[in-house]
Image (tube, rainbow, N blue to C red; front, side, top):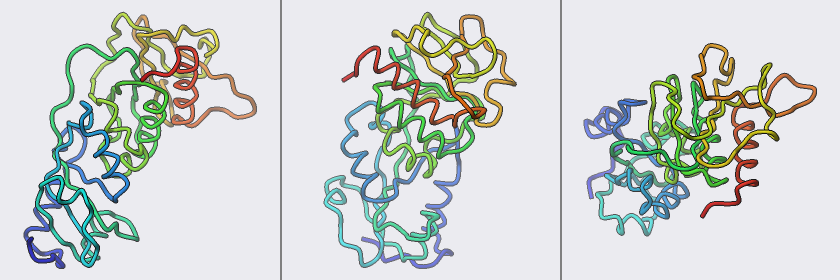
Length: 257
């Protein structure tokens, strides 16, 4: 095991930061912060989404006890001083354990029967919450359109509570409907009420930008606007709307294994 790193000027720490700095489509590595998130990945590592993340380096806070997975994964361990672990975690209270993960390529091929899509969701926490609801209600894949937050940003991983290890994620640059049922959640005029929508598989359910929804997007032919009836307020939070629609799709179609 290497000596404990305590200085931000240490070349090894700077190299670690450099690996984590690129985001979005350029991201090649991410950090799982805390035992709970690491253990959640370990439970899902045999799934296609979980296998996309490959452990590269275990980071342990100095004086913290080793975690059972630390030896089981067979990757090197690096001890960090409290200030450096806090720097990586960007949090007031640094976790005792973190796991550096390398990212494999995005999935290809036909879409899954039940897909959630995010278009222009800018807040990583919102994106994580959308993925979390989709995974909880049996959706099997996620598409990320232009302007979307990084799903492997630490805040998105925390918000998703492991959803990124269950849902294969792929980026798209345009809305190109396949033969499935394509819906854009939108409460504007002419939108189809959720109760009247055909949510049978193959289903592609999209959530628009937190601020302006689909106002600046021309929806392709074959993609229908979908409204969730509400009273007394202008709109729902994007993640809340996604959760309601995902639940309704699961309720009608039954839970997926």
